[in-house]
Length: 107
Image (tube, rainbow, N blue to C red; front, top):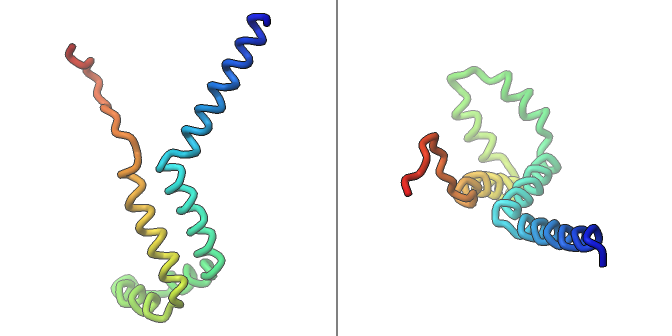
């Protein structure tokens, strides 16, 4: 076996292991759930109509408008919205903690 062939085989295994590690990471799962949930929300809710209606609401009445909007929403839409909110809030906790400092670490 030549050096080039061996290098190709080893690098292919490295790429496969990296892809597998990336695909099974918690953040990847959260982002996939978030993407599916946002797509489902767009399927259940006509977003342009909601934005047009929200643009017509005076600034002082925006809070009660949101409450009326949520009170008159279907259950499945509320569940999807809850999944989006919970997933968005949990993504920062799934990210790895890196030390970001300009000073070198003391040995």
